[in-house]
Amino acid sequence: MVSEVHNNPAAILRVERLSMKFGGLIAINDLNFEAKRGAITALIGPNGAGKTTVFNCITGFYKPTEGMLTMTRQNGEEYLLERMADFVITKKAKVARTFQNIRLFSGLTVLENLLVAQHNPLMLSSGFTVLGLLGFPTYKKAAADAIEKARFWLEKINLVDRADDPAGDLPYGAQRRLEIARAMCTDPELLCLDEPAAGLNARESAELNKLLLDIRDETGTSILLIEHDMSVVMEISDHVVVLEYGTKISDGTPESVKNDPKVIAAYLGVEDEEVVELIEQAEAAGVDDITAAVDLLSTEALHEIEEAHPEMAPTALIPATGTPKAKRARTAVAGAPAAKTAPGKSRGAPTPARTPVKPTGATKAGVISNALPEPRGGKADKLILIQGIGPVNERKLNEHGIFHFDQIAAWKKADIIAAEIYLDFDGRIAREDWIGQAKRLAREGRTPAPRKTGGAK
Ligand SMILES: Nc1ncnc2c1ncn2[C@@H]1O[C@H](COP(=O)(O)OP(=O)(O)O)[C@@H](O)[C@H]1O
Ligand SMILES: [Mg+2]
Image 1: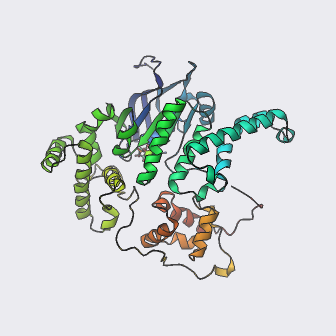
Image 2 (image 1 turned 120 degrees about the horizontal axis):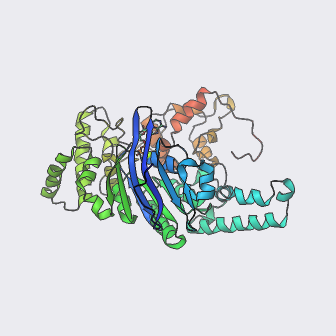
Image 3 (image 1 turned 30 degrees about the vertical axis):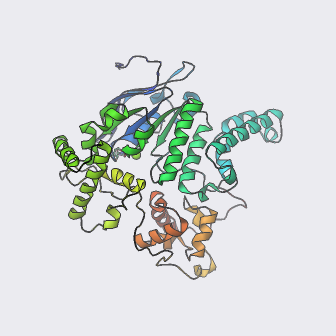
C-alpha cells in the first residue's frame, strides 16, 4: 500500500486510503485525512455519510476493507490501528471513544462508572486474586489512585454531588459528560466522540463545549469529534473534515469549510449548482452569514418536505423557533434528505425528528393513554431492564401508572411526549429506543428477573 501522507509528527492520527464496504454498499471510499496533535478535529457530514463507520474502523470495531490508520503516540510509538483489536487500541494506542447512543452502566453509580473504566490497573495490582483485592498495599495504592482520578473528573464535569446516584438517573446532558469523563479515565491521547452534542439543550451544549476545550487545553488530549450539526462544531473545532456518501468533500478551517458551496449543498441535500441559487435567495432575505443561511434554507426545505409529506405531523418537522436549540435542530434536520433530493438519490429514510423536538403549544402533560391504576397481577415488570431507565425513573414511571414493558411498547407519540415532560427527558426515549427495547422485553416475556440483592448490571 502506498502511503500518500508522509510521517508528520504533528499528526496524532493519519487516515490513509480508508475504505469500508458492507456487501455492495461503499460506506467509506478512499478517505484521507489527519488529526493534529493537541487539536480538536471535527468529522462532519449528513446522516449516513459514514462518520460512525470511520470511528468504528479507528477504534477496532470494524476491520476496514482497505486502508491504513496510524496512531502516533506522544512518546513516538506508532500503532497501525487497522491491525489491532479494540481493547488493545484503548490500552496500548491510547485511543478512547464514546458512542452515538449513550453506553453507561445505568445501574452503577456515577463514581462506579468511573472506577470500572480503570479496572485494568486495579485488576493488575490485585494480582487477579481475592487476596490482592483484600488489602495488599499495591492494590490499595491503585485503588486510591483510581478514586483520585475519578474525583478529578467528577469535579471537571460538575457531578461530585451526584457521585453516589445511579448513572441512569442523571439528566441526559450529565450522562453525556459522564461518558466523556469515563473515557478520560483511561488516559487517552486521542479521544473520539460520536455526536456528543446530539439532543443537548443550549445550556448543556455550552457546558459540553467548555469541557472539550478544557480537555484539549489542560490535558493536551487530542479530540476527534463527530458532529452532525455544523453550527456546534464551528465554535470549538480547530480543523474540520466533511464527509458525504463516504467521500471527503471538504477539509480545512471551520471558516473555510462553512463557506464551501459543496458543504452547503451536502447539508441541504441539493445539487451543487442549486447552491448558488439558494445563497442568492438567502442574501436577498438579508442573511449574509453562511451558517445562518443554511439554517434559513433548511427551514424552507422543511416546508417543502412538509408539503410533500402531509402525513407527517408539522410539529415533528418544524421545531419551535427563536431558541439556539431550535436553530440547531433546523440545521440538523437539514442533514436528512431534503425536498430537492431527486427520488432514488435518497440518503435513507426521512428521519426529520432525529434531533429531538421539544413539544410546543398545547401539551398533555402527564396523561399517558395506557396508564394502569396498579400493576397487573400485583407485580410490575423490572423496567430498569430497559437501558436508560434507572431506579428513580422506574419509580416515577410506576407513580404514573406504567408498570409493564408492553405498556411502553404500545406508546404512541403523545404518550412519549407526556412521559418526557414529567421525566424531563427531552428526546431521550426515542434516542434510547425505549419502545424497541420494551417490545423485545415484552416479547421475551421477561418477568422480574431473579437478581441478587444490590445487583447492578
Ligand atoms: N454494520 C453495517 N452493516 C451494513 N451497513 C452499514 C453498517 N454500518 C453502517 N452501515 C451503512 O454505512 C453508511 C454510513 O453509516 P454511518 O457511518 O453510520 O453514517 P453516519 O455516522 O455518518 O450517520 C450507511 O449507509 C449505513 O447504513
Ligand atoms: Mg453516526
